[in-house]
Image 1 (cartoon, rainbow, N blue to C red):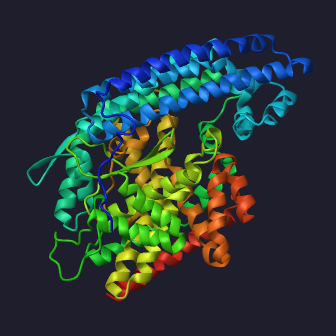
Image 2 (tube, helix red, strand yellow; image 1 turned 60 degrees about the vertical axis):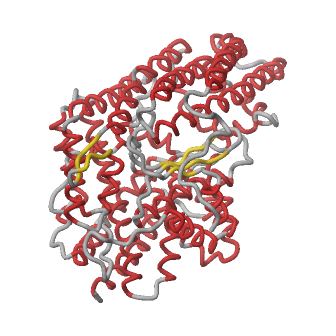
Image 3 (cartoon, rainbow, N blue to C red; image 1 turned 90 degrees about the vertical axis):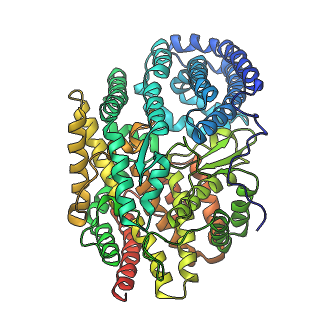
Length: 611
C-alpha cells in the first residue's frame, strides 16, 4: 500500500486561511458580480412587460441569456473553490480566526451573486414555452433543460424581482446566520469522559467503544453539553423553521405549498413516493427492532439503550474495552478491495483519494462533528471529511463518503447544471458503497465470529435507517406543525423527540434520546429542511439497485454508472423507470427492498442463536 495521507492537502488552491490570494479572489468576485448585474439588467424589461418574446427577438434574447449564463458559471466556480476551501479549514479547526471571518463574507458574496442574477432566473421561469424550447436547443444552454423544467413547476411561487432580491439578501444574516451559530456551538462544544475534556466529535466516536461504561459516559457527556445549550438551539430551530414558514406564506399568492411538497420538490420525488416509502417502512419497523433485540442478546443486555446503538460486537479473546481497532491505511485497503470486486476503477479511485490528500480524518481538538463529502468546482475534485479512530463504524463511514466521492467523479466530465443531484439520489451512491464493503467482508469471513461481525453492521444499519431516520422525520413534522402555531420551547422539543423515538423504536430501547434535536446537526442546517428521509430513500433504493447486481452480471457496472450520471438530469421516479423499469410511487418497490433487509436481519438472528 503506497503512502496514504490522513489530512487534507488543499495547497493547490490556497496555502491557508491567511493566504493573500484569498483577498485577490474576493476582489475578483466583487468585479464578477458587478459584471453579472450589468449582464442581467436587460431581463428586467421583459419581466415587467409580462409578454411572450416575439419570434423576431428570440435570437437576441438567447444571446443575452448565453452571456449571462456563462459569466455566472465562471463566477460560481470561483466562489465554489474558495467556499470549499474555507469550509475545509473550519471543519478541521472550528476556531480558525481568519476562516471564521471569511465564512460570512463568502455567504454574503453568494447572496449578491444570486441577487445579481435574479432577473435572469425570473425571466427564464416566466418565459413562454416557445422561447424555452429555442433555449434548450442552443448547445451552450442545453444543460439547463432539466433544471428549468423542474423549477418551472413552481412558477406560481415566484415573487416580484425586488421581493426575491430582498429575501436573498436578508437570508445571509437571518436564516444562514442561525445555521452558522449552530456550527460554532457544535465545533466549540466540550464534554468530559473518563476525566478527559474533549470535543464533541471525539466524544461521538466513543459511542462505538466496546466498553459499555465508556459509551454511557460519552453519551451522557454529549447530552449534558447540549442541555447547557438547550435554549440556544431551541432559538436556532425556531428561527430557521419560522423563516421557512414565513417565506412560504409570502409566496402563497396563488397556492399554499405544503412543507412536505416543497421538500419533495427539492428532493426531486413525488409526494406519493415519500408517502409510499414511509408507510411501507412503518409497517416493517419490526425489522429494526428485531435487529436491536439480537444485538442486545450478544451484548448480554436485556434492553438496549441509546448509548448502545453504535456498540461493536464483542471480539473473542479480548477484554472489554480493548476491541479490535483498524488502522487508517487498513481501512482504505478494505474499502478499496471491496470496491475493486465490483469495479477495479472504483477501488483505485478510493486509494487515489488518500494518496492525494483528499481525505481528512485525523482527529483534531476543535474538529467539527459528523462526516461529509464535498468538492472543488474547478478542477472538479472531491474531498472527504470525517473523524477516524479505528472502529468498524468509521470504516463504513469512509466507504459511505467514498461512495459520494465516486458519484462526483463519474460525473466530472458533465457540465455544471447536469451535476446537481438531490439528496435522495446522493445518498443512494453512498449507501451502495457501504453495502459493497459489508458484502465483501462477509464473503471473506470464515468463522461464525467473523460473520457475526459483518451481520452486526447490517443489523445496526437496519436499526438506523428503519428507526432512527424515520424518527427524525416524525420529529421534524411535529416541529414544523408546532412552529406554525408559535414558538416551541426546549421542554416541548424534548417531549416531541421522545415521542418520535417511541413511535418507531417502541420497547426495543429502554429509554429515548430526548436531546437528539440539539445534538444532531441535520435539524439546524439552514439551507435545507427534512435532511432525514433521503437517507432512508438512499438505503432502500440502493438495496433495490444492489439486488440487480447478480441478475445483470457484467452489464451491471454500466447500468450503475449510467444511473449515477443521470441523477442530475432526472427526477428519482424517472431514473428508476428508465434504468430499472419500476415505479417507486408504488409500495411494492419499497417492500421488495425491505424483504432484503429482512433476510439480513434473519441472518444476524441465526448467527446470534449459534453463539
